[in-house]
Each structure stands twice: as structure tokens, then as C-alpha cells.
Image (cartoon, rainbow, N blue to C red; front, side, top):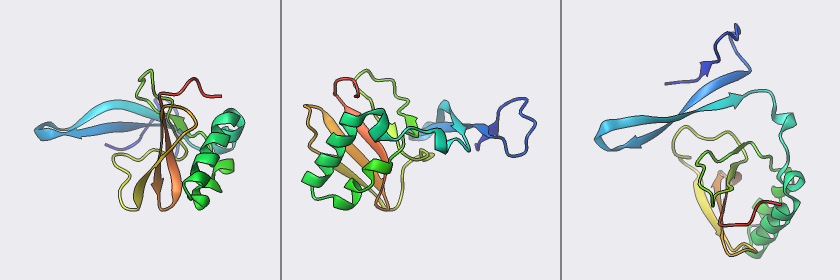
Length: 143
């Protein structure tokens, strides 16, 4: 199941498509969880993390430096909020900084569990040394 253009777009390569988000579970095989709207050609309009949430940007950079992840810390100023986590859990404020994978991140993936300045969790999904997803759990509203 691939991307589908939105109805009535009339374009061969539409700017807006629907992408299935599936979960593989047991013998039943893949199950459609929800459709994700994929907007192309709008990257320049995405907010940078440090502009949208200045305090989180500082805390993320400090946590990476404290954990000797200097190459990742150097990426923080350029990170964009690509898409918020769709889980809708009230304790989750996680977000993608790049297009979400259709399934697992795959080869070159590692998790970086950081010690945040709050009592919750800050975990990064890093693929080929690029920050792809910032997991922000159990934190007061982002600022």
C-alpha cells in the first residue's frame, strides 16, 4: 500500500498525498492504523525546534553535550519540526524532525537516551548520525 493522491488533485505528482501508517502484528499481518498526510514542498515553512520551543532547544543541546554527543548537539539549531507524534497519549510531546519511516527505522538506527532537565524522558531516534525523532515524555508543555 503506497501513497495516494488526495481526491480531485488532478496532478500526477501532487503536493499532498496520504501515506498509510501500518503496524505488523502477529498472524493477522499488517493492520492499517491511520493515514498520515504527507505535504511535499513545504519544508521551508516548517518551524525550527529552537524557534518554536526555545527552552526545549537549549535543554536538548545541553543534554547532548553532557552526554558527549557533540555531533548530534551541532544539529539542534537546524532541526525542524516535521510532524508531531500521532499517538495522542497525554504524556507524549514527541515529534519527527524528518519524514517518518513506513515501519521501523532500519539499518543505521540507534536510540540515544538522554538525561533531561525535567523528571521525564528524552530519547532520540538517530539514523546514520542524523536526528530523526525526538521523544519527549512526561514533561510540562513544551516551551
